[in-house]
Image 1 (cartoon, rainbow, N blue to C red):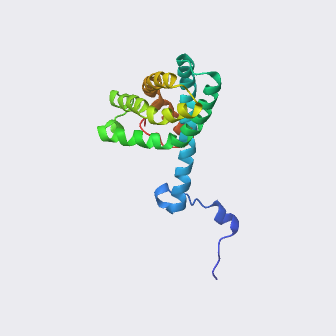
Image 2: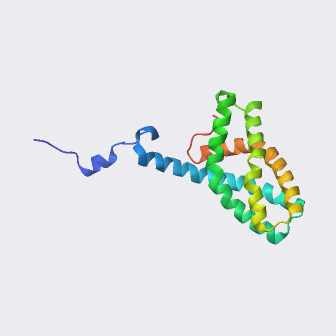
Length: 172
């Protein structure tokens, strides 16, 4: 006779598959998790550095509360896209195939930190009501801070992704 496996036997089977073979829903679930992990990592990493830069540039405390709140949301929403851009940029210059820390990886992290800061940071300062003088100073200092702090972001981001069970972007 045709004996079907019991429910316990079916549940104990290992049906896990790599992301590429899970179909659309599996890919959506995987990338959604990456979105959350990268978003939290990006927001948590940059927040203290940008708050310090704002304080040193003379942003008023009430404006700083607004900028950090909007900044946290913006960072969360753009963290995954930033890491995808990191990956693509590194691949373009061949930094993705190098083991360990390298000058090319640091160049990618520093340049992206500086370049991506301005288009996201300007609206945040504007919405917070910062004066034009404070905005100019903070944008210039913020971009410099973004570049300098970006040097360490890649390492921290990849360690965070590994800790959360995901493949690192560059540091394999």
